[in-house]
Amino acid sequence: MKKILIIAVFLPIILSVNCEPVVPQKNVIQKQMIFDNYDYEDIVGNVILGPLIDQRVSTLDNPVINLNENGLLGLNFDLLTDQFETLSFKIIHCNKDWNRSQLRDMEFLNEINNFRITDFNYSVNTIQPYINYQLSLPKPLISGNYILAVFRRTNSDDLLLTRRFMVYETIASIDHVVRVSTTINRREENQQVEFSIDYGNLLVNVPSKDISPVILQNHNWYTAIRTIPPTLILANEGVIEYRHLDLTTNISGWNEFRFMDLRTLSVAGRNISKIMASTTSIQAILGLDKSRASLPYTLNFQDINGRYILQNNDPGESLLNADYAKVQFNLKSDRIEGNVYVIGRFNNWRMDDETLLKYNPSNQSYSTHILLKQGYYDYLYAVEDSSKPSYQLEGSHFETENEYEIMVYYRKQGTIHDEIIGYKRFGSISN
Image (cartoon, rainbow, N blue to C red; front, side, top):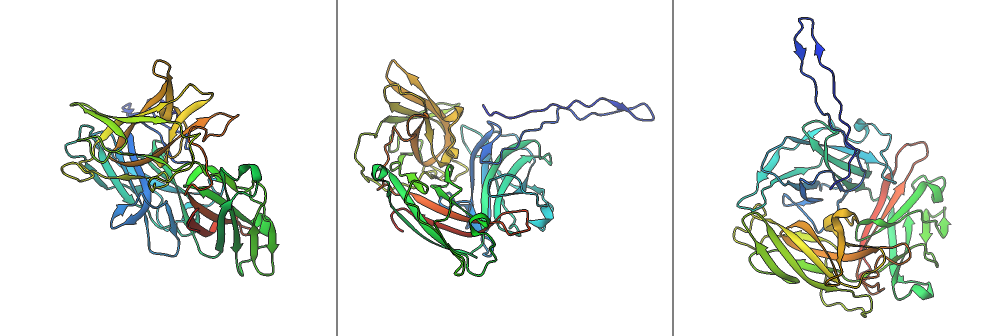
């Protein structure tokens, strides 16, 4: 169940001069906006935000675009209902810390910041009815962090979902390398990111303050590396280096992702043991997963770095024919300290009640159910325990192939917002 702040406002009936009542506004719903990738109601199904490629939103690319190129971002999402609702969206500019900036709408958009969503379609012959909505985002005027907020009608307080995206410029260039950790006792499990930023002739008064890099692994903001001090500043050359010999830019390599193939609901796909369908629901039971903590690193297949791909291989093959299944995750394990979650890009890496696995002592295993649309999914098991690493069920290896991104934020002296003047995406193996 989503946790939101709801304020019910009841307005008194006001009589007009001819004593006829004016209809009051009832139950004005105000949900506290979370500046993160978040769904505010259970009615929200699958959500994809990414570059538009041939009029479809890509799940294999991150929600990041170049300010000075022609590409646009698109949003595609389902509402799990057959009752049409009028929806709108707006865009919010944020600073590097994902708090709302002080910019006015007209400073980052050349349109009125309230857009109606007009492109929608009903699902076809699905057990779970839904309405699929799609929109293209207007290109902002400046670079930076942004929040896309979708809400009912024109009431921006009646939120349905929020998603993060970024717009960058190529003012600064980034040179990088990913290597084995220089900290001896972490060499087997960590990856160390070293990089330099060349900002050229850009006016930078205090490089260590005006420029702020952030490192993401697999586009997971919960493990982002921030507040990275430079190790060398060459002000005359416009270069800053970040080559730490400690753990400052170390990040756990984790393991290659587990996966499940839910592209067909007619037969059990890979890593799915059983499909059970009725006239009201579909259930997909995964095979019994086990801890990989004590196993050596192996690369049996190429994963997609925590992503998922929506695809329907059943008759019809259209994504509007793609159904939803209640997927049962099963993990064989003794009870461990801390909570166990299943995570991936499909749930925005969130460890919350919806992804929490419950322990069953009778069969010594953890399990949970999550409603997912037909497709191919990467996932991992994470543990929330302050005394042990979150990868304790998966293991962590420096050899693991991960995707990294470096964003270079810049606050020009005298301004009230952060720009992104450089961006680079790369793999830990293919440097």
